[in-house]
Length: 448
Image: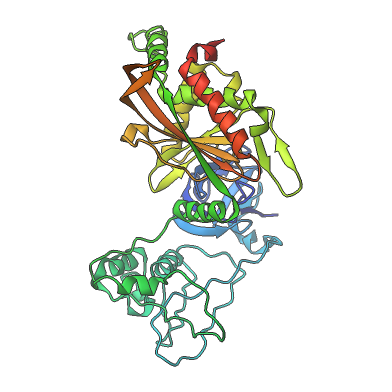
C-alpha cells in the first residue's frame, strides 16, 4: 500500500515549514535513512531522513513552497512492486485541519459587504496548483500560494497585479515588482469605532504608509525569522518585569591571559593555530562560573515554582542575516576555554548557514549579547524567554581610573545585567554581577 510522507515537526513549536529542496526525485529508490528533502523552519534549514523504504512515487509539494502545515502529505512512497496506478489509494492522514488564511488586504470603499474567506481544501497544496481567489469583488485572481502570502504580508491588492505566469497567474516576481512602488499599495481601512473610550493602539500599516510619499519606500515582506523575533520580543517585554544593573570591569589581566593562551595553542602542519580564543569565550566561561557561585540566580521562573538549574547552559546571541539566534553552550562551567572557542566557532558558522538543530538553540539558563566589537560602550539587552537574565557586554575602552589615590590607565569594559525580577531580586542580581566581575578581573581562577 502506498505511504504518505508527511511534513515533519522538527521542533516542539513548529506549525509550518518551507520545503526548500527535494534531494530525491520521482522514481528514485528510497532506503531508510536516506535524505529526502531540506525543510526550512523559523531559524534553521534541516535535512529530513526517510523512515520507510520504497520508490518515491509522486511529489505532492514542489520545492520552494512555503508555509506547509505540519502533517500535510508532501510526497507518496510506493512499496516494492507497486506502480503509480495505486497512488489514488494512498491513505489520508487524520491531520489537524489547517486554519483558513485571511484574504490579502485590499482597498475598500466607505461602505462594503463583509469579505469571505475561502475554506481550506483537503488535498495537498503545491506551488504549481491551487489558484487563490481574491475577494475584492473584481473577479477571480489566480496566484501561487507564495505570491498570495507575500501579497498579504505586504498589503498588496492582487487584483491590481498583472500576472506573468501561465494563463495570467500572479507569481512571486509579480508581487515583488508591485512592492517597488510602481503599483499602488492597497491599505486596509481603519475599523469602525466602537462605543465607549477607545484604547491606545499602534498605528496600522495603512496609517504608517500614509506618513510617507507614495513611491518613497519599498515593502519587504517579513520572513519567518523576523516574525519569530518580533513575537518573542513582545512576549519578553510584556510578560517579564525587567530591571537593569550596570558595572564596570577592568580587563587588562583578561587580555593578557588571552594572549598567553593563544600563544600556547597547538599548531597544525601548516603552522596555524588549531584554535584561538576570544574575549567573548572568556566571558562565557566567567558567566557560567558566576552562576555556579551564585546558584540562586541560576533559575527559571514558572507559575508553579522556581526551576533551580544545576548546570550553566549559556546562550550566546549570534547575528545572522535578517535577525539573530542564540545557540547554547551546555555545561559551560565544566568546559575548557579552548573547547568553548571551538564550539562557538562551529555554532557561528552553522547559525549563519541556518544549519543549527533546534536543540542547539533552545533552552539555556542565561544568555550573553556582546556588541563590544561594534564599539558600543554599554547597552541593555532584552531577556530571551525562558531565561531569567541576559548579560549585555560593551567595548573595552582605555580609561583613567583612580586606585588608592593614584591615577592610572586601565582597559574598562561595561556590562549590564538584565534580570527577571520575579526570579532574581535586585540584591541577588548584584551578587551575580559581582561574582562575574571577580572572575573577569582575576581570570586565572577560570583555569583552576
